[in-house]
Length: 140
Image (cartoon, rainbow, N blue to C red):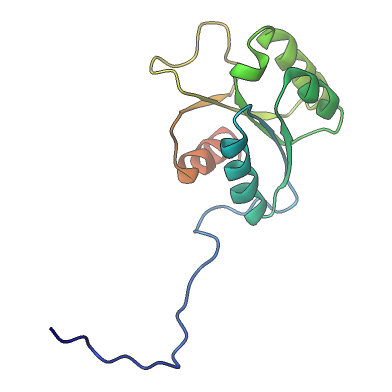
């Protein structure tokens, strides 16, 4: 077996952030009770310039809602006791909020959960799906 020779001093070009829309200056709320998923979203969106706030419970969502956000990625688990109340709070504090629901449900969102203009991304997801849903819902 022979390995091809390569120039040892030649730097390898790597893009740290995969291609996708810039989120510079955007405030994104991530409502997710799974720490690993929340970290993934926080890292990926932050790498694209977004200021990301993570809420792991309904109480944390209520606390962070007053900060105002451009977009929200929402897993239903943390707010399942009062989805309508949580959405009312978010829409009141961020009237132009772009909402993307993220759920492991194979059948989409239950009736009454969607808000006008919202999108749904099924777990497990690729970051590109999240970015496409954000972009599709609004020109962030």
